[in-house]
View 1 (cartoon, one colour):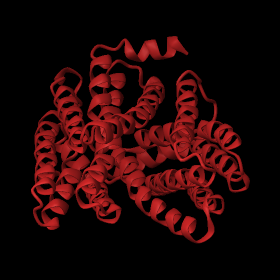
View 2 (cartoon, one colour):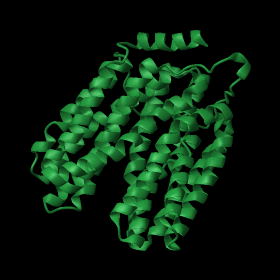
View 3 (tube, helix red, strand yellow):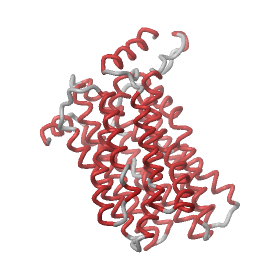
View 4 (tube, helix red, strand yellow):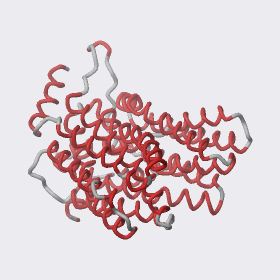
Length: 408
């Protein structure tokens, strides 16, 4: 396993841009929660705080694709630098609007601008890996790099909420926002400054006609898979908190979710060291079916200990599914639009989290926490159905890309 990761991390500049990418994407797990803590502490309303956080997430999901298109056309360095500065300014304005008791419309506007300007580091770091490894003649190791980034993602979502919660509750909610800004702006600027590994920009030449089209035959079901995973994540988080509370151990909810993330992290690390014989489409399907199997028994569980064990095992299916999905997006998307294609992953996940959490909350209120686990089960089934209609083999996916190139 170590030799596989050593091979990709030994590429010149790889450790530097991956480390900067880790720091730069911390706001993915910190900003929404930080806003929630800040607004709730000043207004006393979880409803208002939740709507501000939702505004941020919706804005981020809406602009992800055009943002990715802009990065592909203008280059990572230029776009990410400007975006980081706007993001930092918007977060600072949000704090001012809340603490100065300005009209809530200004808070919503600042949250929307922050979400819209959040640098798409997650997509950019994967695009950069594809460029660096392809340039070195190691394109067959892209999956190992994506597996490594999946481990980084899990680290981000394990550490970020802890940092912002500790600062927001024990120091001041503004401290949580400040940490988010420092990580987001500092990490993004450090990432953007590393020009030696930056993929070339692909500005559109109007004289050549239309842009190279995206291969939606493959990307459409992959996007549905990502949305379904977002639904599952959003629902499971809300339900797990309610489940722990129902069993008199609300503080255990964080541990249960951490076990889920740990299972995913371990599976992601192992995936990067394996050379699979099956095609990516089959692996996306198997991973999705694994999530269905993992979610199926949760509605019947009545103990914290058993739930922890099942969450740990269930997490094993998350990272392999995401890694195969990411690799398939990279495989079929034209290089000139790769960041835009990668943005589908983030767009889908973010777009699914909010409605998943909302639906789960309604079911918890009306039926209780255990029956509510049927919501993430339904989301996992949706992912499996979408994966089922993917091109049946790697060769089919290659033909999809070939058709795109031919059209161009």
